[in-house]
Image (cartoon, rainbow, N blue to C red; front, top):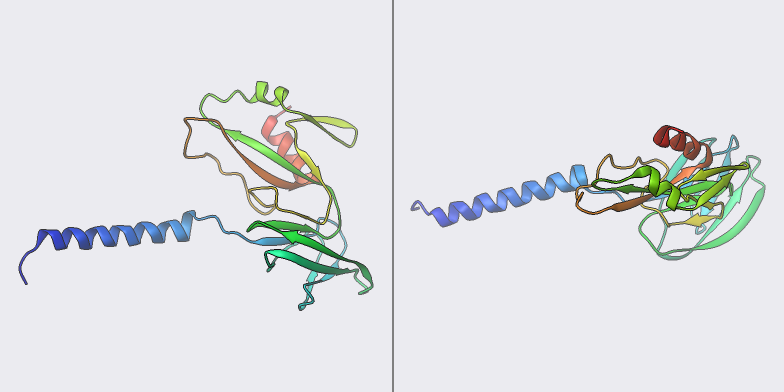
Length: 189
C-alpha cells in the first residue's frame, strides 16, 4: 500500500475523535439519576411502581429507577406499617424523592467574570429558616418529589463554569442542615 497522507490524516482524526468522546463520557459527562433521600434518624421501606421493596436507613440516599410520566410509591415505617401511598409525575432525567417530607432548600449559585457576590445576594429574595433570614433566595421544598434542580443532594457545585464571559447559574438541592452549613461556609457571615 502506498504512503497516502489523506488516509493517515483521516485515521488520526478518527482516533482523536474517539479519544475525546471517551474522555467526555468517562470523566466529564454528568450522570442522570433519581434519588430517594432520608435525612431523618428513621428507617423506611418503600415500593416504587409495585416493584421490589427497598430500604433506606437514617441519613442515606439510594438511587432508584423511575419511568417518565406517572409513578407511584408506597412508604412504610420500620415496622412495615404503611405510612402513605402516593403518585407523582416525572418529567426530567434527574429528581429527588423526599419520602420523609422533610425540609430541603434549592439554592441558585451564580458563576461568571467580575461577579459581585454581595450585591447579588442583596438583590435576591430572602428565605426564613427557623426564624432567621438568609439572603440568596433559596426555595423551600418539602413535598414528595422535585426535579427543579441541576445538582442533587449527593453532588457538589462545580468549582468553575467554562464560559466565564457571562454570568451563569446552577441550582442545587440541599437538606436543611447541609444548606445552613453551605451558607455559613460560602458566604462567611
